[in-house]
Picture 1: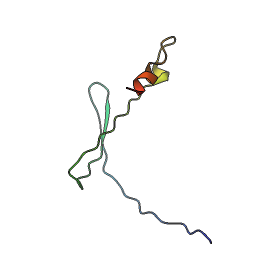
Picture 2 (picture 1 turned 180 degrees about the vertical axis):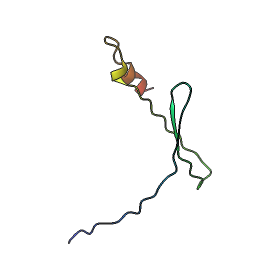
Picture 3 (picture 1 turned 45 degrees about the vertical axis):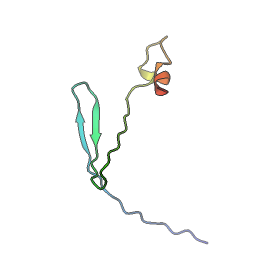
Length: 64
């Protein structure tokens, strides 16, 4: 049975970006279809930010 490609309609989402005074970048995409909010936090740090001899903290905090 041949497989036919499916066209998925693209949807554009409004996105607002800001940078706080402490350097934290904030991305907001409002969707007022439901009376709830969702928050996701991503930190631009990791093992590459750890000094030599002090590695493992990024992995530790990942589990907290």
